[in-house]
Image 1 (cartoon, rainbow, N blue to C red):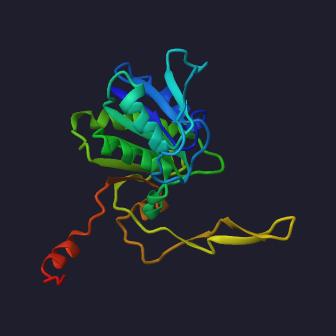
Image 2 (cartoon, rainbow, N blue to C red):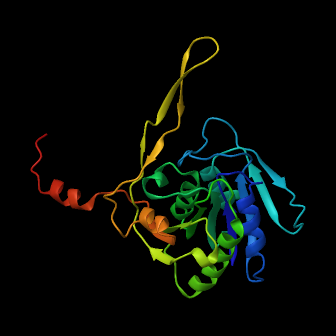
Image 3 (cartoon, helix red, strand yellow):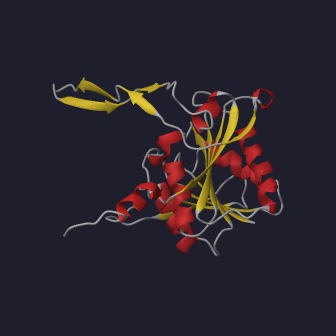
Length: 257
């Protein structure tokens, strides 16, 4: 299996390094890494159109056989460039991560991690986005080993090319994990998203911050609730944003032009 690894934390981030080392324990897995040259979190599905992209081949001193490129672009750029030009052949799977911090609910719309996986399925490659919900003291080993076991589990299943799996792993030990939950996307809302500040010259500027609102109306089968209850959340995501219920209603209207 040929696997392309990418992320939005940067090519030298601990999550992607540990994930690559772990997956290479399986002799049937061949790894390529194409990732941003620095952190590009919360860039969504942005692509670079008005300046040239540069891909620099990277040497990984902990593993001289590992082949990778750093790209001065977004996570989506990395996947598009890798699949359409850099790799000798199309990968069988794209894994984006392991991200430092959760990608839950509506936050996936902003996530560079998830957007990289979306770019893969747009190009017809099965993909998954993997995030570790712990920010302060992340231990990526358990998450990476879960991904390795997961790959061996799904080997007998056909992942659809047009759907990615968004996986969020709580920052807990294996004994503290309650299990695996198959979920739908929840809702993430923030209070006081911007802080107003004044620079040394007396001019106003705004810093995006905000406090996460803990909703009591969240449905039990969402990724937000699953992670809160110490479950690993796996959510299938499809990039078709069409509201089919409204589509059928609109078709019944006699439109006047």
